[in-house]
Length: 94
Image 1 (tube, rainbow, N blue to C red):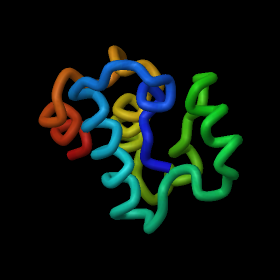
Image 2 (spheres, one colour):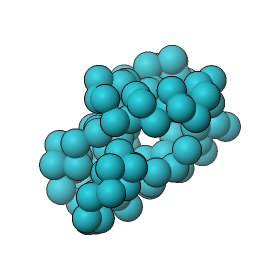
Image 3 (cartoon, rainbow, N blue to C red):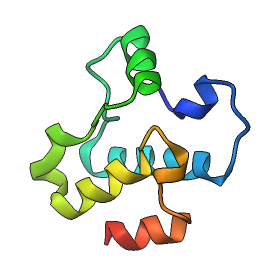
Image 4 (cartoon, rainbow, N blue to C red):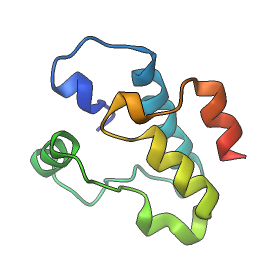
């Protein structure tokens, strides 16, 4: 559940993986769950690898639009589209 798409693809790991993991924790803290708790493992892996999956939309009321935007970016399947640093991501969550 916590693996980033690039981990599933066997790509070299960068600091973007840490940001992905941090974003999952940042989602779980206010909602009590991960964004994909209603999906089976195979479907989750497929969606992470295929792209176009926006996992936090169903929590929009609880998290607010600014946090949704920050989480979507930090959870992007392309590590190059994530924030440059975890600090930048944390500032965006505020």
